[in-house]
Image 1: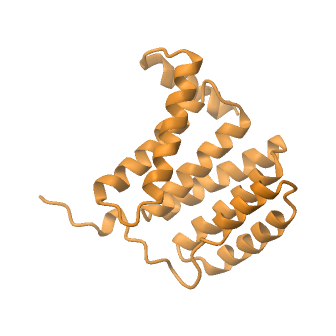
Image 2 (image 1 turned 180 degrees about the vertical axis):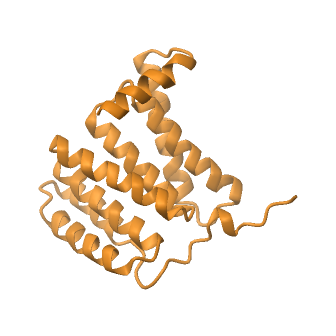
Length: 180
């Protein structure tokens, strides 16, 4: 929490002040844009950059107006976006941030399961099959305990898309050829 407060103080020294409604609206719109890009069948390198930038920007806008739940979801989305563009180490870092935050705050059942799914997905990106399988089994267990049917169905759909097998076939930004 101290790190979040320090980041918040530094970030808002330089940013135009938005009111609470503006911050929440922008944060939610950017989060929605992340999902649009994640669900796109094919993304360009520019769209991958937009996905990662949108995830970080959404997180930034939730810092001053959200609470522990929004912060955990924002870290989860950064992990999801980083994994989708092949940045496994970054995905693991933010998946762990989300997981630790939600456990520390006693988050709702769906969010705890979702953050564990995020860990499984992040480890899949780096090809750590053992950790992926460990966290995937825990995500399935936690998902089965979600009380609300709609929440459980949503998290089941996320768990079902964690890549199986060896290292994922995600093209990383480093694999892209950029013009000189």
